[in-house]
Image 1: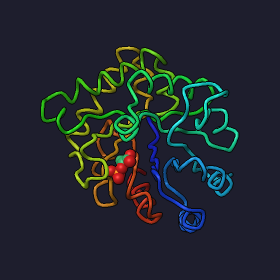
Image 2 (image 1 turned 180 degrees about the vertical axis):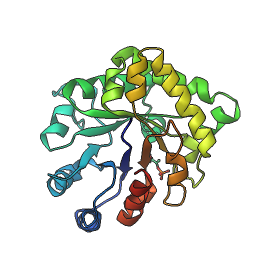
Image 3 (image 1 turned 45 degrees about the vertical axis):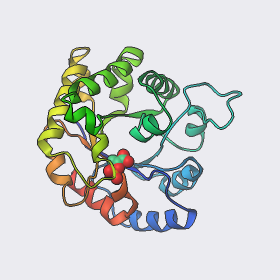
Image 4 (image 1 turned 30 degrees about the horizontal axis):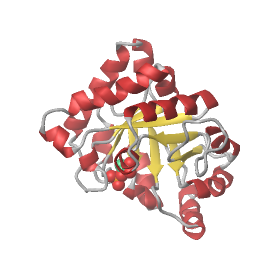
Length: 247
Ligand code: PEP
């Protein structure tokens, strides 16, 4: 039985004051499922301190594929661990689209994060044009295959995969539970061809305009093991409601 996991992706939002207010509201209730809050690098120590000893872990939104050294502006996996971060989002569609991150780079970052002891949340998903062209399963399979080829199943089992259709991120358009379930099942079948037992244990999250109103229906699907939540995670009350739907 896979334990549900719900991760907040704050993206490039937050301030010390706003984070403190969010944390006060969030900590007033006990999250009913495993949770991770993924914040901008500079706020990770603040979150790690505030959430120390709780069941909620801290995650980053990117990591370098390299070991520490002369790479100006990059942040190494060891540094994330050093400030209390345990998870990291890798290959979010915004990084693939806006920073040109390739499948190979996503796989290299996943390998590095896992080797260092971070738990990766590897994002995959098709654009609207790819869905409309009937290429969804092919695109997602290619993205997953790159990670499997480089890292094997272990990195995904230690962390999670997030299926995030690009057309559903921040748009208010959510994949229907049936659309999401179809892709999640295909991802699990792909991993199962490498290692069936590991596939059964690997958590596959759905992301894309998840809200308090639609979370329960999505999380009820057999291959949806929780969510990666962007906009709705910025409001602690909404995020807690979504976590409750994953109970
Ligand atoms: C995301 O940023 O990963 C995401 C799913 O965003 P939203 O929930 O706002 O669509």
